[in-house]
Image (cartoon, rainbow over all chains, first blue to last red; front, side):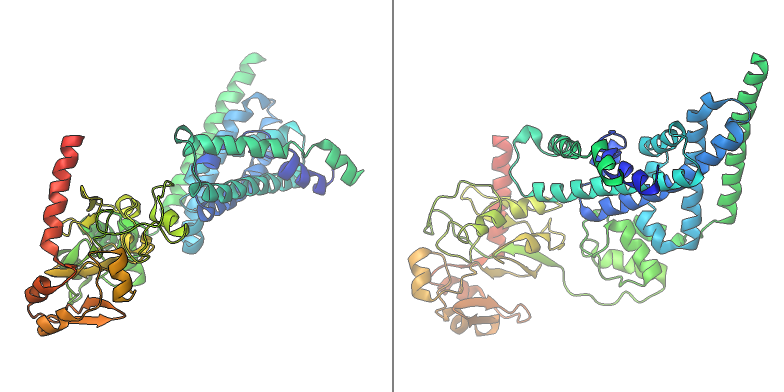
Length: 196
Length: 284
């Protein structure tokens, strides 16, 4: 599959939040304003790209040679959590400005299921190193797109009248559901039409 | 064969986990960022209201701002001079003189009894929503709309409503964060010094005759206050009296003489609010 195909697949067709329903916690929790939603989206993109590449290395050079692929979930969690912590330390040391922008979101996504999800999906799809990396970035961008759309809607919702039982999180879930229905319009037919 | 697999699984997870753990521990030692101890100390001194009056995100943000970005130490209005002196001690600076504590107050007493209304408003209980609809239901477009905006935004519950649907600020509780001033669409919520004895409870810039038609407690710009209390700092401009609180002269004569009785004691304001709070307790 070409790289453009991978990008379209993970941003639109298999959008992590709106199609696969992974990473709903930050999607609901950090989408109250556009600024923090953007920060979260960037941090997730960054971590997903790193996680894809590092888990690919672990899987192909440790798990496969030892014939213990069934341990992929637990090893991936270990690797991702340690990696994110390490990245946080490095950013804090090297670039305080970037740390201020991403720092508070990084610990939140150490064990985010979307990050683990991209690692497992890469394995399932038999991607090579570069394909895994591109898939990680594309999935992160899909997450960024979804959370950004959600945050702008929620900012608008704040000034609208909402029935009392639906205020806050419930209406956010209803909104998310409607957005997911809209994203159903993107399916493999799109990909076939675009790329033949 | 199965035993080898178990051994491999056990060893690989242990080794990966151990290596990552040790790696992180070493990285944490090498990449340690020295945190200035002073910011933690300052954060303890700050009131912890996280009101945002200083312009930083919360008290810890302000503490970091003082230590790292050289922010002014006078920005914490809830803390007042006490906190300022302590911070100055830590940072090795002079405390400096900051102005008197300012408190918010509603400069309007118009309600259903005293003022005329254009229409009945039955929408969202929010002043900005009221303002968006023909500038509010009152004929007076400058006065207090008596929605709940300032009451909701106040971080210390210093703002209340009395039995006559008028809004008051309790100056003892007010921490001068000015959030109510920002949220108020008509500008009827204004900051006055804590020591202010009287306020002009009107915000209308309409001519006297027009004010008289729609409000019995509105300032008509008659300038009697200027004459009765020349030292009181009264200034009538645009048909509205305002007080220059830098002038410390007597203001009681003007208060008595005001034909519309819109120059009121700020003490009255407080007592009324306390009574309101009592009533609210009884009502639950």
